[in-house]
Image (cartoon, rainbow, N blue to C red; front, side, top):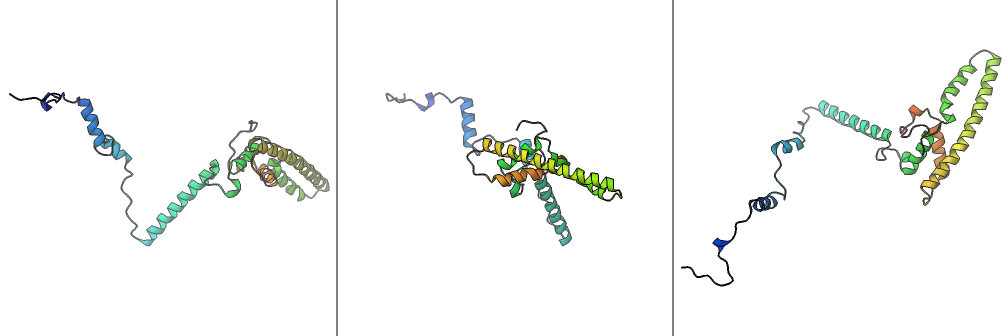
Length: 202
């Protein structure tokens, strides 16, 4: 007969641990603290074998040119979307983005600058004094319209910038000129591409 001390419990009488607890303990103590992934999941995360090294100098130059072309395409696509990481310094920042949106949300007289300039240039080569005089008059009137529209645009840019970013020290002359030069471009040729439609509330 086996003697048992009071207050102690025999190991053989201890209740077995639940199966779920044992499994969870094994999961926590093995590996990196998480269940082992399935083979299909592990294979799906593999990037694949690396390409073999180039065997000739011509092939190495070809791969280098392909990588550079891919990097340029990625950078240009990011700049067209307005991604600050790929934009030049003059287009970066939320303030410049706001100015672009202010310009793109309105119809600007400067957007017709290139078509009117081409029309005026054609008029100069027509051997008719009447046509040339009308061409000069059209150019002067259009130039005055651009000046008036640029003044209105500059005031709108100042107001919007001070409303959105009142605590910053802005170079208003540079921001206004940035907006006016963008306004003189045809909408589809603007870069970065417009993010807001015409008539949007900015």
